[in-house]
Amino acid sequence: MANTAQDGVENYSWPEDFDINIAYANPMQFYDRYLARGVHKREAMLGKFIKRNLLSIFQDWNQKLGKPLHVVDLLCSYGCSTAAITRLFKVEDFQCFRTEESSFKLPKERQYPCKIIGVDIRQHPMDYAINSGLLDESIAGDVNQLSQDPHGAMLQHIKNSNVFHINSIMNLKMDVIKRLIDAFIQGKEPGIALFGFYPPLDHEKDVRACKKFLLEKLDFFDSFACIHRTIGKKEYDLYGEEFGVEKFCYYENWICLRK
Image (cartoon, rainbow, N blue to C red; front, side):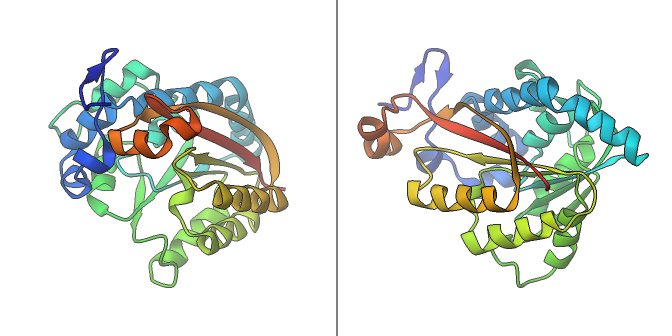
């Protein structure tokens, strides 16, 4: 499967032609590949799910708590998932990111009052998200190294969160996932957590262990699957025949409630 345009979608291969260091330093590099590979369509599906199933719950929490909800978006990068979770972006809304400007007008307002904290390994993408209004605050650091500051502040934000999102949760080590969830369940206010798995790229055994832990600690609310992005030749060679993955890998969204 060559890296050529197929069915109107350019098939970039993330490990083969995606230099993450360049992309994180240049928003246009990032979004060219992000949009070409169709990741924004997966984000839009999350926005639709929230509109159908969670928005009224969030608005009810706003009213009962009498304050904006506390949102924590972990592994947020430039705030793509943040746009879906808080502004319910549709597919066409993500085109606004095709700009060289560091600050620009987003096509939608936040759909419920909220304060948004982003966490990522690099500061630059979050600066971009703050300038555009997607984030209010940011914490930069390697989440897989929880012994280092400023993770104390991050864990406190997670404890205080009403909406907690982890993009591609299996990028984190299992012991780190446990600490993050342990922080979340300590919260006293109503809270919902959203997690993403991407089969078949995630190791099946690790996914089962993670899901078992989540079910022990949280109340399961719902799940849904959607196309994640196009796959490259190496990924196709590894997973295509075994898992029936020809053009796309998939994304499984889990939604759980704080007990």
